[in-house]
Image 1: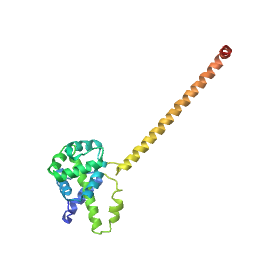
Image 2: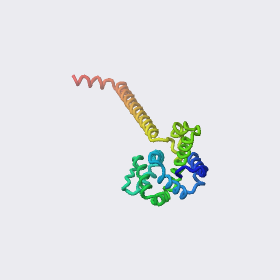
Image 3: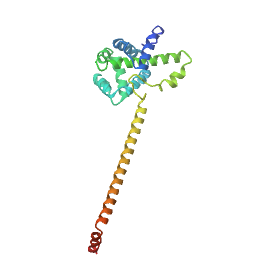
Image 4: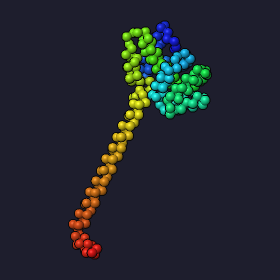
Length: 215
């Protein structure tokens, strides 16, 4: 899948469309792994880093952890750090490309190879359009990163968006907790007032006598 081949443009479009719709049924995972291997061996490192990091940020944590376990430890793939995952995948793919097929052939990772290849295809098309001067630079520079990523059916295209959502949810939970606490305190006060009023109404002499004893 690298360098860009005009004769293969329909293939890129097929993968990109699958990524946009989330429907990868028509794609062959083994073929996707071959495309991915070509890309890792030939594409500029910065471009690879950006794509892989975007991919890993969208990838469910369980799959990311599984992939990190499959990557040899010398590549330092940490499932909690998408940058290290991206670096690890790129270095492994360049130094030991034969491992790509073995790792992504895992039943739980087979689909992720197709998703990643779909994302690569989208970047390839956008990159090609930018450098061909096809009047679509705005798509690459501004619109591309803002697009909804359907590869993993995730609601956010970047980690910051996810963190913002988590922060808002946390704030909401804290607000609800504070509200519940206030309601509990209010109920306790109401019960205390009712009890005191009830005691005073039922036995006023008792309170009067009690005060005399204190003095």
